[in-house]
Length: 276
Length: 323
Image (cartoon, rainbow over all chains, first blue to last red; front, side, top):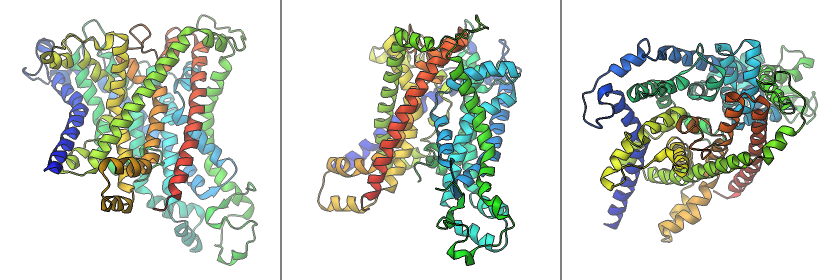
């Protein structure tokens, strides 16, 4: 009897936490379906409408927020950042996993320190520098600075995946007359494919969710959804329903991707410190 | 280490002609190029690292000048910027707010995250269903989360006060009072990041050996004793990883505060990164703003070193415990 009561209490406690965790998202759905004239007069009973989504995904609202464009920008810079990190990070991660050489640990820790460095330490000088170089408000500039987010993640996690591979497989390939390069591309890389997929998606999510870089280093051409979503709150009459719709639209890609990589999240989120 | 690169599987060969040379593969690469290989692989990463370190170095360089939009021809001022920071009360106010935020957020997230992990670990039907959506808040951009909460915490039309009305708490000024603003921003942080702690703690719980718990059950140990003496000590390395990540990230909080309060009301949520942002970007006092960040960077760096070393000790000790 006592055990049953405890089990029910535990489940109730869990449900309570998940109400806290899910209510804000549910409330955004409700807000985004409200017509503007009922925005502040009703809470739970109203005539739902998709007008807010039409406005957000259309040409923009009367304040002229080109949200679709921001969405495309987010896609371009996030994919670009992950692609560059993979090209540069995979060989580096492999080298760091397979060889011990002077400076390798130092480089790894320098990369890790990027993860913990306050972003503005680098961004404020970059803000000045980008104005001079013409990289301000460009895709190239954003992809470059996002390496701060994506590269440490990809190098650290892929090193832990390469280290988990038994070197004997590559040794066998070398004995069969493969070159080192072939052993890397034909033996090692295919074996860590799931890891690459997972870490790429996670890096994409972090790049997509970044706010401080586009806030400071873009103005309109390369602005992303995280900055764009704030612009609906501007003006003297904040449009709650548009803001909610914009917020929901901008969290769709990361959420969809996250569901596909649940199994790999632990290693990814802890930079390889914890393996499940 | 001699500096000569050696593939790990053959690391025991001190010299190029080892005893086990018979097992050597025939290589197409001449011997003199072999030690260079890892460096060649690393070069792109080094270039990119340099591309990030250069602006950082440039930032350090700026801090000894008085570079600002109003002073395009800056003068060398030495440590004047830092002297100003440390003698201004506004810096210490910001430091206090930042530390309060970081400790508050990290503490609540740790307790709540571990509690959620323990409850999920029981693997009841409800738990198994809910676990699938555990990571949802964590994948939402913190700035978007702050926007959501801002809409809900609106004093006059926000849904939270509406829901509190039956309890006689209709008009709470959530983000308009100093304490309320700080607690509200910590709440958003907790909302986003509790799943982070919960996921790591859950992974830890699932990797704990079963035998000590079986022995404790046989001895009739109570739940609290088992938790205090077995679960928590063995789980601690996992929890510590989460705590370190959360504490360090909270010290440099920006997105949540920017969207929710922009440092207000007054200076009650003016954390260091927000103040540096206002100084450098809004008031265009570049040198002074960067100096703020260099101080924060140094603190973060030192704290990380200490915590990571402590973590290493803990993990070594955990490894010595016979499983």
